[in-house]
Image 1: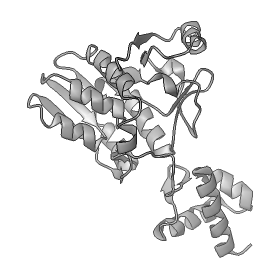
Image 2 (image 1 turned 60 degrees about the vertical axis):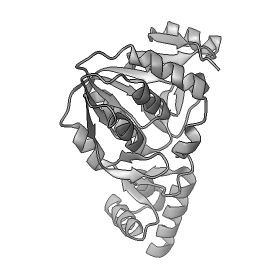
Image 3 (image 1 turned 90 degrees about the vertical axis):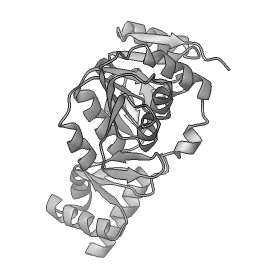
Image 4 (image 1 turned 180 degrees about the vertical axis):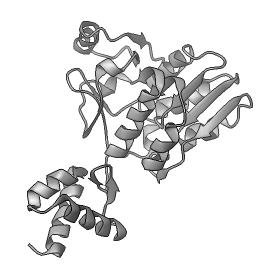
Length: 255
């Protein structure tokens, strides 16, 4: 197979699967991993994909939903979850807020009190900039325009500097057996790093996320210290969390 043909096939695979690893491509095309890496470098220069840790991801990722669209989905549930999460934050805490819309609602609900907040979200940073007592640290990194979030190696490296009391985040899917998942590798890697540097991880997830398994595995349920969800969560999922000894709080969404 000619190099150009192989590279075209790689682009097709990445766009179909959204992400793929170098080792998989090496086996698939029976070439060395170094050859695949050179292919990926060339394809990234041509803006046909993005390289990631150990592989590549599609630049045509349709699973990154626009923030403006997520902002108007399950609003009552997200606001109720955010208001419950505020109760777990004390003056002087150092926390992380991810780029989820629930984290944005949390930022809006936070009183102006002494806090240090690290975030990869443009929307969260802007919201918190209105509160004089809150120190905001942005991760920086590669901007994903749909989610208005920073991701990538620079964002991940910036987190290595810090240790926080609590990380508040969401995800695309929560599966009782398979754990938490995200739409793409960038988000999954960064959120895992956010969890690694925190004493506690609080998952803010409305009931629509349960039973869902999306493309990239992010963490196990055992990695989560507390889940806040809404009262539409079904009995099976509720019992599953109890059986796995995952602490959770159920809030009532006021429509």
